[in-house]
Amino acid sequence: MIRFILGRLLAGLVLVLVISALTFAMLYANSENIARRILGQQATQDLIERKTEELGLNRPLWQQYGDWVVNALQGNFGRSWFTGELVSEGVSNRLIVTLTLVLGATLIAAIVAVVLSVLAAVRGGWIDRVVQIISIIGFALPGFLLALGLVLIFAINLGWFNATGYTPITEDVGAWSRSIVLPITALALGTVSVVTQQVRGAILDGLNRDYVRTLRSRGLGLNKIVLKHILRNAGGPALSVLAVQFIGLLGGAVIVEQVFAIPGIGQLAVSSTVKADIPMVMGLVLVTAIIVVLVNLLIDLSQAALNPKVRM
Image (cartoon, rainbow, N blue to C red):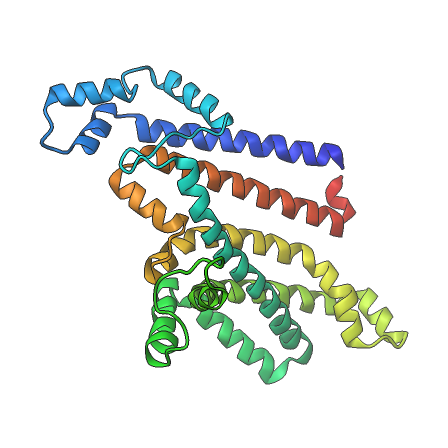
């Protein structure tokens, strides 16, 4: 098991290094253009050259990347070129908000998807058809359209929740919950559709297995078989899908955070990219890559716990 974990960690480390190196090369390839973006299009060539030297952009690219890696390993990701804010503080403050949305959406999606999948696979009939229709609609509708529809119905027309803005939980728990319910719902709907289809298919496949027929012949109830045996076997594929959806939700949060004006890493990524705030963009890329690696590692460990063959 230790070799299993170490192998996954090593592969994750290589992935993070490759992603950071490629991103760094693409962002820092044209140093003159970087300085011009910071100073503005009216800046003289002399000012551009001095700014390039001040930022150390006149050095070889490999040397710049090496210095960035050394500083990053020490927790120093630099400062924003436009606000002067420490990149580590800017990313960490907004990361908490985004992870709250994504984790909440993933948890809700997992619970709802399992319930709908069991009902659809075991009951069948009109329940299965309704679940299928809901899944197709939820999968087909774009995230921004879902978000706008939720705002229109539940925030503007009914006034149950906040239309935009975010309140930290440390300030007011009630206001915090009202500010995150709609964003989490908008993120979760699409995920519910995908996970429901996967789990439903796994349950239907499990119901046709020989061991299920054997258990039924011994008088074991269908509900108990599904909950105790089939769902355990379906857990592996479901976890894999949830991991992919979780990573996808990090990207989907960009749209949701823009619609609901929530200060997460999605909103920060958009503003930093538009301004060409490269230190902030690099910090966001690195943190996102690390999250992806950790999520995949947790899923691998969960898969190994559910199925010992994976550890081999």
